[in-house]
Image (cartoon, rainbow, N blue to C red; front, side, top):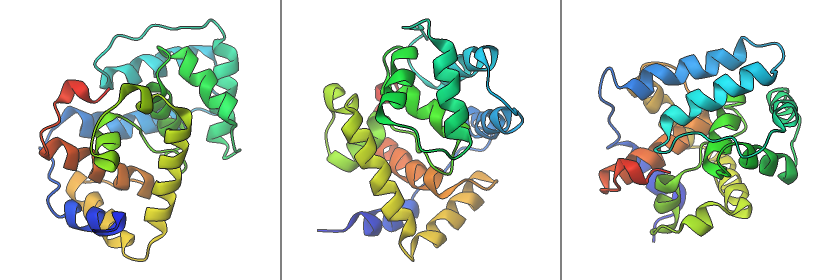
Length: 196
């Protein structure tokens, strides 16, 4: 059985992107939005939650009115401060009670530390899909650890460099490893709408 890094190295070779794809165009702009902000406020979070949901198959519904607390969590995540499990749950409760949505917000705020988590990534790692398991915080935290271990492997630098060439701009190692998983699951026939 292949190790995860062996699968990533092998699968990356087949990853291909369509020139002009809207998600390739939007991604660096989402990152820039947060990079240009000195301090994230309610106004910024409402806008960011909505553009994040442009990458999701469901419409955004705020599930809490505690937007200021969520903005504080994002400011701490942006500043490299370690946020708590409760902080991640705060973001999850804000955006449709979706851990996937929270992971995307965290990634856009700090793409070096947080990777996007969705059903395609889950399926790549686990071979099947369970919405219940996708929404479990412990599974997202385990995924982040797997990403850190994978990008620390000596062979991962070539994977990251190849992904950068393919997308046409530099992405963080966390984004590169997630893209390989996401795109490889797409090749395996997981429908777009299932990428919750």
